[in-house]
Length: 393
Image (cartoon, rainbow, N blue to C red; front, top):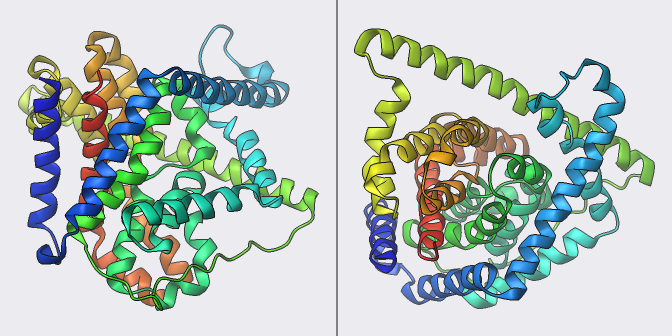
């Protein structure tokens, strides 16, 4: 049955993408097939081989240790106001982001991350036949996040065509940032976070190949990565600390606002219709959850979490998911977990529009105009990644 649901999920992604495609005649089926096979091979290796299991274990343990080290700093500053024996989300999950941000800054300072990102992107471009810039953005978005990634190609922004811009932004919205991976791992099973990061890179490119196929000339296929401004080591440390703190505060503020808003809407719907808003969303998304491979008996609960992520953000959805995960089957837990690991939600439209607009007014307007289609593309990319994991559970 797993194969049947993989095919139905794949069909859902293709049909939605095909109906929304800018250029159906030029869809590159060979490139799509190669990337789909690559996804299956990588997922099999990560879940079913000693190398994959050890690799996931290493990454999970690494981020767990980084979070623990980050908490040592938090305890020094806030230890006196912690509730003994209680889990405080801001202190235990968000503030350790500061330490991880510092480590990313160090890896960037010594050109380790840029080297890895650039050449993994080039190798990937050989595999799928897409442009080097497209593959670079797909890989780097998974490391740097949807806003910061465009700073590394800022001098190219004005010259990027509308079609290419859609692909780049879809990849950015389908990714996450390594800085907050540790926070995700506190909320959902770490192995699904690792697998989702890998799958989302290819899922975004597959979806872009369906919705937005195009050919590039040799002159267009250029990649000019901009170095960040040169700072001394300790200047970089200071900036990274502040960057991490900003992320933690922004996420905290969004959680306060969105969770209160969702609870308010739930309260109104419960008074008016005797059913919560999240439950209504669950009924709307239940067929999609079922097509992806989630058992029908669990599809309403799973669908409500998926919809919550779409209308709020992944953190709000993960917190809700953590409350019900114990009552779901392992397969449903895996599929929903992978679906949640991306920036595909309504608030990301504004974030990515602002990031691009800061570099190019013209291109920012173009992103805003295609915001809903970007959200559609990045969401079905998440559906594809979640469908792939369901095949192996």
